[in-house]
Each structure stands twice: as structure tokens, then as C-alpha cells.
Image (cartoon, rainbow over all chains, first blue to last red; front, side, top):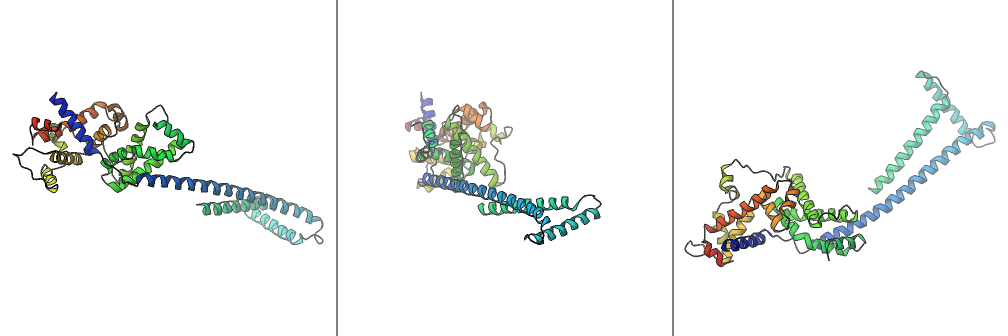
Length: 140
Length: 213
């Protein structure tokens, strides 16, 4: 009986000694942090949505631009003087010749056009990545 | 309101109920973290992170209702405190680290080897209490002895004692969280309590101690 009482006494006193409390404002601080994190998450979502829209817009502009340049070259080939694309055509011819020379210099047979297309596609990809990084950089 | 009811309220967007959960578990969790980190400010920082984790897991429904929510919380508390300890102290927290072949372990002195018994007298002195062997101990003096003992007990004991006495976890639950055999858990609780009894009975008779029960 006595032994049991001492055990209960020790249990109670050990419990009291182990107990340590947080500061009074602890719960409020946690709630503040949670509210802030929710606000940040909301902002992040908004920015991410905005970045997505910008990316789609950039892709659309790039596609339209590529199509426009491609078709303008074809149109201008028949009527160099009257269309406003004469300069574009000469730039295209110059670049195409240059590309053909580069290809033959490295020993690959093919037209200059194929290398030119490759350069244009690479340029578009680089432009897209740069735009994407710029947007993401601002987001972070 | 039960924990699960609170969780469901929080999930449905009633954020204010989460404060109830924080109030319910903050002190008991804090007691456990302090035993590991031994620093109040760091323990509060760590506990804030714990509640952020719990909030995120409530919102993402990653808590499975088949386990007790309190056990779930205390396992997060323990693991987060150990991670915090490893990250900022740059060393491992080893709950196993007891050398059972040491002669101190056999006598139980390993439990008191971290503090000098004269600390009890210092503790009594700092409270303005003068100890005399002839005079029986007062409640206050007993509190000082117990506090000194508990505050200086090695963490591989104090963590288990805290989980058992403060967090109300069963031997089985503690064994699962700490990944230690259930026998080890029971043994450490028994040894820690027994050593305290021994320490008190060195300074007073069982009859005197019973007067305070």
C-alpha cells in the first residue's frame, strides 16, 4: 500500500518536473505564420497563372512570326521589286549561301536552307527559354 | 471537440480551429523538444516548423485516421527535433547511446553521473533553503531535488520519460516512434524512477516521504 503511494507520488512529481510551457504568444505566432504562408501560396498561384499565360502568348507570337517570315520569303521571290520584302529576300539568300558554304566546309552535303531552318528553330528555342527564365526570375 | 472534428473543420476552411489544436498540443510537444535541444528559443522555432508541417499535412489530407492523431503529432515532433539537432549541432542524436557494459549502468549511477549531488544543495541554497540532515525535507526541498534530477538526467532517459508522463504515449507507441524494443522502454522508465526514489530515500525515510503523499 505504502509502496503504491510512493509510486503515485513519484509519478506525479516526475510529471510536474518534466512539464515545460511555451511562451504566451506562441499560438498567435503560429497562426500568423500560417496565414502568411497561405497568402504567399495564393500569390504564387496568381503569378504562376500569369507566367503560364505569358508563355502561351510568347509561343503564339513566335509561331505567327515564323509563319509570317516563311511565307513572306515565298511571296517575295516572284515580285522582288514591288513587294516590301526585297531586302528580306536578299538577306535570306545571303544567309542561305553562307549556310551552304559552312556545310560544305565541314564536309556535309545539303542545301543551305536546311541549316538555315535549323538556325531559325534554335533561335526560337533560345528566345523562348530566355523569355521563360525572365518571367520565372521575376516570380522568384 | 475531438482532434478529428477539429481537423475536419480546418480542412473545410475554418482556419481558426487550428489554433485550438496548437493550444492543445503546444506545451506537451514543447516539453519533448526541450529535452532534445535543451534551448528554449531553438525549441520554439522548431515547434513552429512542426505546426506548419502538421497544418500542411492536414490540408493535404496526408494524415491517415487509422492512427491516433496525438501519436502522429508526437512522432513528427520527435523526428523534427532530432533533424533540427543534427542540422544545427552538426552531430547525431543517439537515443540508443547507453553503454550497458559500463559499471555505472549496473549501479544506476549513469543516471546521476551527469550531475553532482551537491547540485541539489546548490539548488536548495539558491531557493533560500538551508538543508540540514537532522531536519526532515519540506515539499519545496523535495521539488528542488526532483527538478535537479529530472533536468540533468541523460536525454535517452528524459525523452522516454517525457513521452510516457507528458505525452501520454503507451510503451508500445514509444517503442514504435523511437524504434527501440518495448523492454528497453519499460526498463528505462523503471530505472529512472527507481533512481529518483533512491535519491530521495538517501535524504529522508520512507515514512517521511509518505507524509507528502
